[in-house]
Length: 220
Length: 317
Image (cartoon, rainbow over all chains, first blue to last red; front, top):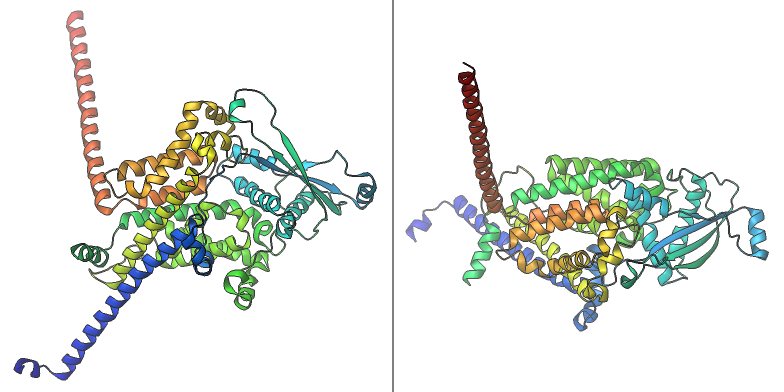
């Protein structure tokens, strides 16, 4: 006690400050450790399939992980990607558009705008073509999941408009969109030359967006 | 209690995975720089005011702040600025300069691009964004630190967060594969090889050979499912080696080069500094032995030649 009383007040204050600082940092350490546990518990619940706990916590999961740490790790699962989805585009002038209204769509003049990108990607893995072709995949998938969804239709129209601009189809005012789903040969047919089944899905006719940026992707 | 103390000391004392962090920074920097360079000719088409998309930050930031941030999408010049900032950040990560600032710049610019056109991005980009968030708390490259500092604690929290994120990614992916009928039958890779986007025509015939398809389907599924257990066991280093081979295969056969670059960086991140030191010393030892063996062979060969030459001169004489 005698020793304590001999410590000058400024030194005592410094000691108290140091202890307080130590405590604050230890509290912060515990908080960060707890955050780690809570964050990854929520992440695990968010990424795994539905279960009773997840269903109860869904609003919390959407507000936290879903908003700021959104993630999905299906990665070719449970159903692997096996279908080639081609996006076919038919530029239409005003005259052709009015003819289409009465006589239906022409069978010629269709362009597949994704296949050239696939081929370029296969030729050069160190390029942007794979990614550019990837845009079409989730877009078509989103359309097939909900055919009234305006967002994928809008994106497909923009892709088609940019394509028309790229190939110099300046007279075209409309674009007809069609999806070709090229189904895979089944495992039992792998050694045969059975042609792959193609399913056509007509999306619709939409006005071309003349303001869209030129892609400089298609040299036809 | 002892376990808790040990864990506390592990977090509090010294920073971990310093070599791994550097490798991760290099891999992310390389991948992002590659993305900037290859996407530059298409910048206006992908993200500009007249681009194919109308993605906005409003969903994430709310209408008021979102509108302000969306200004970057109103001119091609701004988009090029975003790409320039991304390139600066990626270079910082690649060469290890101002890595914390570089991480921050990279995270902001890369997030803006992904929000604008999410359809362009894959799982590799998602894990990149998540890892960049955790990387903000890592010690900067060449930072001076003393044992027990709070920033050392934060560094170690970030290290564990990155490891846990990778574990979640692999386990969830493995789990989803395990419930898929085609993955269970062992033919999933055959079906993936049928697509133009994720296949290499010269290699697609390989995937009609049953043994190759079964191995290529079951091995990744088992690898991902067992990953969290394997990396805390003695199998850790071989498991990481297998993972690197697996991702090299994905890069070549499926064309997912950027995804594989990030994943290889993350696999190498898992190796501790002590393990790197051990690998380095063993590597040096092997190199020394190899060089010694080569020198011995060369000397032996030279001696035989000299002896042969001497023999031929005496015969001639």
